[in-house]
Amino acid sequence: GHACVLVQTNDVSILIDPLISYEYDTDIERFTFDDLPDEIDYLLISHNHQDHVLIETLLQIRHKVKNVVVPRNVSGAIQDPSLKLFFNKIGYKSIIEVDSLDEIEFNGGKIVSIPFFGEHADLHIKSKAAYFIDFGFKKVMFAIDSSNIEPMIYERVKHIIGSIDVLFIGM
Image (cartoon, rainbow, N blue to C red; front, side, top):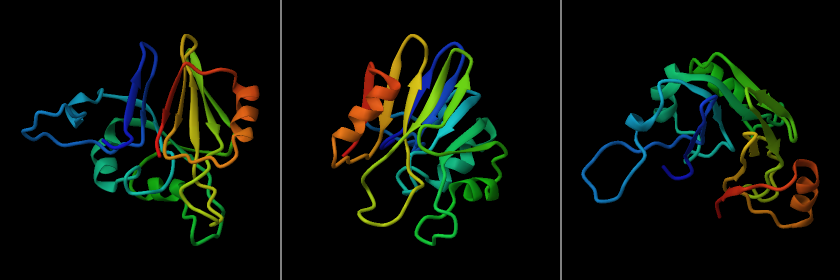
């Protein structure tokens, strides 16, 4: 998948931006539905683009997902539809909506929603997030498709969350 990452520890499984490949003959290794665990504790969505929120994939993994984490939208703004409402309408039960710097604790760690810049030019779209995950033994940040124009912002974020061990970033 394009931006899809699966992270598993003994305590938690986290899937980010699920665009999962199907099986076909190729010499290139691909992450497929067969590689997914039976249960996904958290499904994190960075932003509402089809290469990150693909309904065909989301319907196929719905039975595995315990919790979906989505960035909160600008209420009533047609250019910023609600991901929470979307996931609710396609049958997901536990949907956690986050604002910047909200924290979700899990056994052994936490997920923090980080400000996300880029992808939408000057449109007032709030439903986008990078994610920092502290597993206790490793700190990972997923800034998928983020295109920050002001480096000072992440310097301030670093002051809040500290150093990271691994960074996934697109663009």
